[in-house]
Image (cartoon, rainbow, N blue to C red):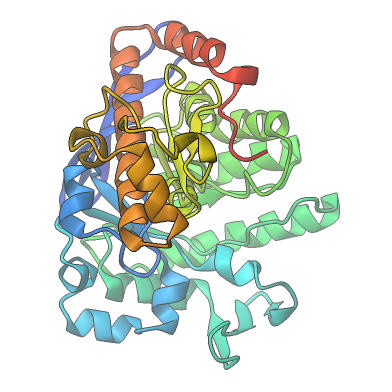
Length: 383
């Protein structure tokens, strides 16, 4: 049996949105699903037990950061990433490519791979498809990502074309480098913001023997309508029987639009990052802007919970807005934890509601209701 399988359970009759089951060596998980990000083998401020209680089935860890420290070999000696961080459910590791290519002038790309300087100490490092896959094999994640180049926005057509072709060659090398039979590898569709390149990439990656297919290079600064258009093209030729993963997307409006276009899996630092900035993600019944900025003076004497009907630890135990505001303003870590717990639980419930809507062929109605409720027709993510 393959290490990673995906079973498509139902497609919404009107929209084609998908509900399925992702099977990994560490459990079966219902899709669509959202993966909290644990960059350094931890979801910031939270324990593995807390993240599991939020309903998360798969989390994401960062190959680039773990490659630099503490190093994949140390984690392998500890028994792999699951044992190292005491997480019993699924783990997806990214390839390290996005972080490397974000270094700009600190890296040099060749056909062999990428030479870069560590952001920690400036030492020279090298990543290639073979090294990335070997690193992820040593980490022991359930899902490893092929090494690719994340094309910046904007990018000239010729650059995007040559980069996408190299990503395809690196995808082949990533597959050939596979050494961990308990790990599935996902290929990544690229193509920049060019429809023909996206379509070609979806055909090429979709035809390869990957366990699943990811869509990369989106939500990198482009207008949202362009992102949605490129997403539609990117999923057009992907196989129905493999999981589809949209990388780095996590606001509710983007999650809905991703599911609408056939995506099964998502990850993003958004819910924990905005928690550290003092923001709570809430329903339109609580705020038409989809957020509460807890530093605001309006919450000084507000003794209500963040959301009255939320079942997260923070709201269930009625930690008040006034108390959370006090913690945030005094830089107390407990305040960040309370908001992170709330925001991640908010998204897990949101994904469950989307799945229920798909299974009952109500996804179009669910989407319309969402965009009607939120001010401006979208979840305002700090714009």
